[in-house]
Length: 187
Image (cartoon, rainbow, N blue to C red):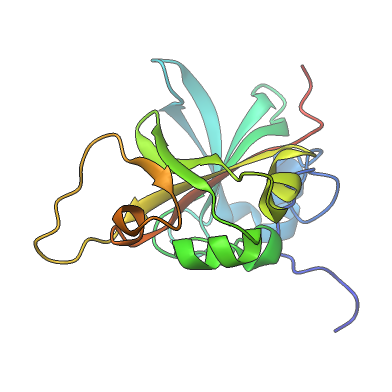
């Protein structure tokens, strides 16, 4: 290794890395090739349409979505999102799409609280574990989960509990989306 960080690693702080708080669309085109960078107008929530930039739109393993703070100049990412089954992109400790609940708990060093905020289950609180500092102190990284249910087990709405509870463990949660909001977001 030549001392370089993993080019697919994205830090909550946005201080460094291939995609960081100061990345522009021009940077993305230079790094990944202009043909791999595509803009689309999409609903970014609450009925608001905005220009969103996708890198590797046709490659689910490398696909990443960037919503800009400044959609005119396409600079300073506001939200950087990966979602799906698997990804080359990752956050600290190699956490990525598909990482199971048990692995998150191991990395965190203690159980944490899972709950449904909004539409999708996610981490409500890391309960002071390692990942609270690393994902929520410098910037904010939201980890969303999806369950893989054994046959005959029905999901219930409004799941909430700690990661070490049998009722939560039997839902076989794994990471389905990671969203970074960098520390340097311009207010």
